[in-house]
Length: 438
Image (cartoon, rainbow, N blue to C red; front, side, top):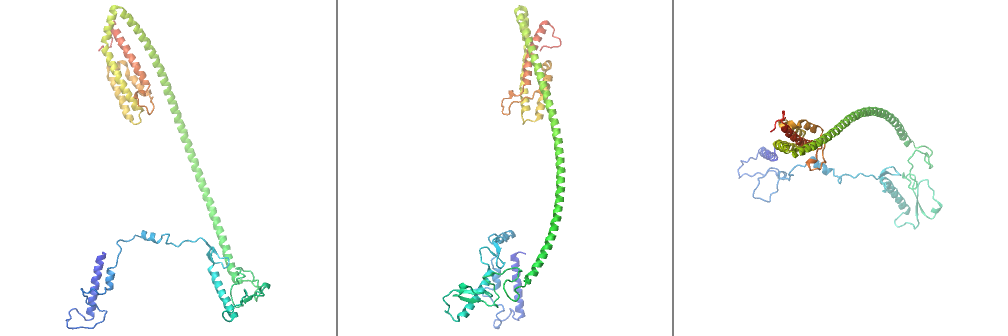
């Protein structure tokens, strides 16, 4: 039920209660206007709408009371109530009074001692008034207060002496009380007796303290033994875990060293293979160079003879078309090999893309008759397997990647030139064999 509904329900209930009271008093609303009844002031009176000087009722003041627009949460209320500025400040300058033993603030007068001093001062003033007898009758000498069992000194002869009688049970301000169980040093009827009023509680406190200390020592010893046992178990578990971890780490280190040795041996094998391959290529290059020099000499000799020179030039011209196809194939292979080596050295190009490029190169060489005649497929496989040279990461020139492929390209160019002259020589001799001229 909402607030407005509750207020409406309360108003209807009060109206019904008012009607019931009027009916119980015998004053119905159907009374004639000529009849006037003098009733008590507690009965409801007719309200005049036009009368602005009427006093509002108590219920109207409740209904129209100011209400908050929204409810405050518990967190907000607690934060406001527990604000450090509203809390009682914790005092750290508390110490026991050296005279009475009650707690007091440092550098402040003890309230209990001050109250005793006030009472004693009032008694001293009362004694002085009794000695003077009337107002304004104080002597012009110094006043000395003597407590019970105290005698005046020689220096107090010319002074006024005020004595406090034995019936006054106050503390001696000249001799503070001793809060112990020693005998009273002053004289008296029981001055040599012990203060048994404090002896019994202190003996009980000492016994309780001894029992508590013994029990506490026993509990401390048990806890210490349990702590030592737990620490020993924990140290044993940690030592076992440390040994297991150390063994596992040593095993892992041994496996890594074995793998590293295998990789080192594999790298050394690759290096030896590259060195042998380079030596073989150098020997083949020297052999090709020698064959080229011999061919040049033979060409000069053929050109020097008239008919043979004409026939050789004709054969070379016929083989020029094959030479152009082979040269175009080598140029295309050079571009694709550069792209393949760039993909091998790049960190962004996936391995599948490089393998696809290698597969396309092998298919192209296998389908081309010039590549099959020159035997380029095996050379390409050797390049893909052993050529792993890459330039710096900041290198922007693709042709600086790779070493073995450039040796093979130079070797292929020399082989194309050699095959051209061999085909021309076979054409001159009439022994073409299985080689078909294009």
